[in-house]
Length: 194
Image 1 (cartoon, rainbow, N blue to C red):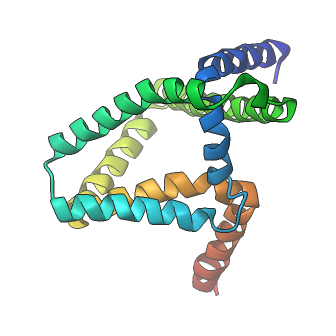
Image 2 (tube, rainbow, N blue to C red):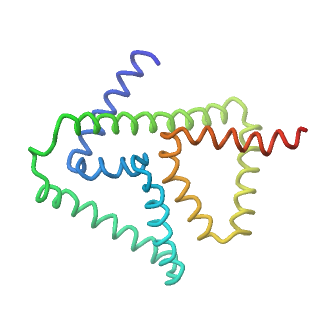
Image 3 (cartoon, rainbow, N blue to C red):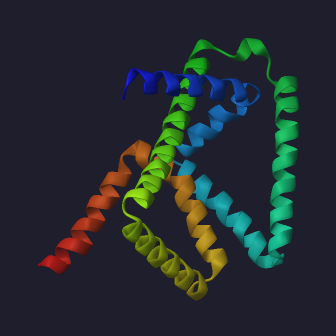
């Protein structure tokens, strides 16, 4: 990466850190859970997601009700977390080790955002350079997505997607993502080639 890109990423990381200042006491434990720093954290993630989706499945609310309730919960959390952290967490409990961990989290988030931006830029470049490939790929992917979502229950698909998103950081951190890809490659691809 060039010096300009590194400086840009450093600037973005510092802005992100400034925005997360009032959330820092909450972010550290959440990050710990997402990276599976304890053995039972994947079970906690799966159990929490399963409980939420079971409640949604039992209550059968409409899509607009789910969106409204989710946005209401997010607004309440956004309002209450800074107030509660300022009441219950004193400034003296914040140590240099916690600050270092927060900087690590901000760097990780900044790098992830840079990767997403790079993918988006690559897709835009392909759209301009090779429009036939871009549109064929887009049409095929959207057709497959429409077919899968029409065939499989959407709540089940959303449940699987949420679990994959929440478990991916831990899988990557523990190195199990590479192991899973190698295992799938060996079982699926090599078996068909033999």
